Figure (cartoon, helix red, strand yellow):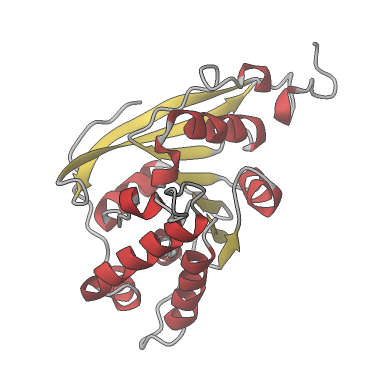
Length: 255
């Protein structure tokens, strides 16, 4: 089933109020500066004088909450599911998901490679407990690291719903590495929300994983960061039951 329409769902006031309290719109530029400085600190690109360059092209954006809520609804989170945001930045969408589906999601997990952004996400989660009235919220977890190895990759293996909009994934080879990791490690039936970037396991070099990404929904919504629109693609990962994660033959299956 494919759905192409304008984003219309409105986030409940209790959710938008809480998110704005944790991430004040007036402090948006401060968060951009934090992200730029974090990119500079992680950059391996430098001038002849040793000055890192990544901050000159660093893009920081905050995804539209209404659009996010509608895409998340299309991914159909079930009671007990775990949500994972890969490249979660300061944790805004992780906390939004925990507020939107407080009674449904078992865990809302964000993985971010930048320590300053990870620390800001932790601080926002602590601040959430100080809001009055305190809104209901699902359990939240943040991990500092890459989703391609270690604890970040373990988070992929535990995810039922995964969201991907980090600008890190925009380059071709980097995105292919992510798609391969998802194809090889996500559980069968996991849903993936990808913004603007199509998922193709075979094209990413993960044909041996026995997985494919089945497109369920395609939705167009606002993207104020670009002054235009973004396309949300909602997939279900379907795994060849004869194969295990990573492409090995499953027990009892035929090679």
